[in-house]
Length: 67
Image (cartoon, rainbow, N blue to C red; front, side):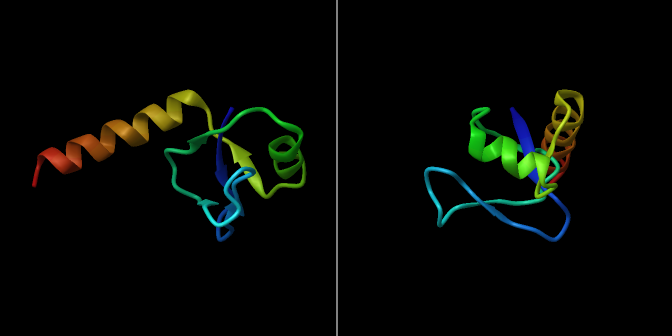
């Protein structure tokens, strides 16, 4: 499941509580565990459509290559 934090939030990762999922548009791939599904249900995490994540990665690559 591909997720990102809601704007302005950071959510701790299930297995690394001192590492956070941010609102980066590329999102983070996480397993569909109860922990992450609860965060999605309460609005702390948002599911990222695969097409949006791919577009964000492509944009990053273009910007990196232009430097």
